Image (cartoon, rainbow, N blue to C red; front, side, top):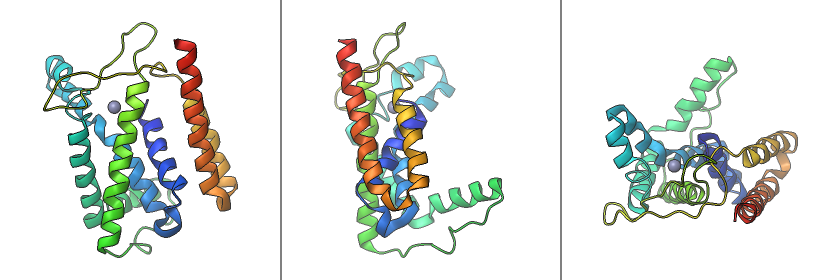
Length: 208
Ligand SMILES: [Zn+2]
């Protein structure tokens, strides 16, 4: 999956759970942010192709590193309001008024637990998506080292080629639907996730 699709998967997960009713846009933004973070190991390309080959889809794509990463992202956002800064930056670029300062939530233990759980589920959604989105018509499948650093065994269940636009289209249509029907965000997110799963299964059957 591309970064956009990973983010949208996380966001739709939080909205489908109805968490936006209590935590508004911040919980969706956190889920979107956490859902893209496992790809940090792709930045190892800056250290050369050899390091990238060794680290990509291993260091950031294991259960252990995802749980640690999720706790770090959730903790940093809880303490420093990362998504609030993101919203202010976006509003500054778009020249629209920001709501981040006015809607800054309380820091209580319940929200911290919710934040950590949401971030963990979002990073796990990244792993699930990368397991089924793999390779292209020219390139072979990419294995995830889910058990790193304890094992370097690779896992993959290829069903859709990387770069396939089907799910992107589903997410874009869903985004427009949510903007038009703000009172039905949760059912739209649930239908979106259902359509995404159905699309992946159907594509997987056609690849088999
Ligand atoms: Zn990834």
